[in-house]
Image: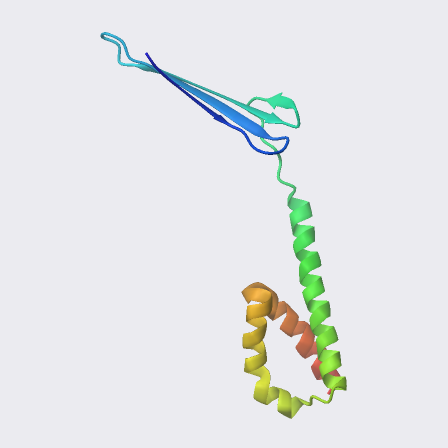
Length: 124
């Protein structure tokens, strides 16, 4: 009989363990037993899954997007008060966008630029 055990532990309250047993004897094709136990917060949960907080994730994404937009508006306002005008901005627009991709990433940059250009254009 061949027996193998896998026990995984982690730092913190969550850990998991699994045991696999395979038997090989004379004339038997073999049998396998698989048992899993998850220990979450000091309690054993067999076969239960934890729900993903979808609404919290969506709320966080909206909050981050809103903060990027607000930062863009504030930057557009400051750029206008610093003396940047539309003709000069049109000459450096793509350099600014390239820099902002590096700062905010490909997802955050369009949100930031929308806030920036909306505020800057409304002030020009």
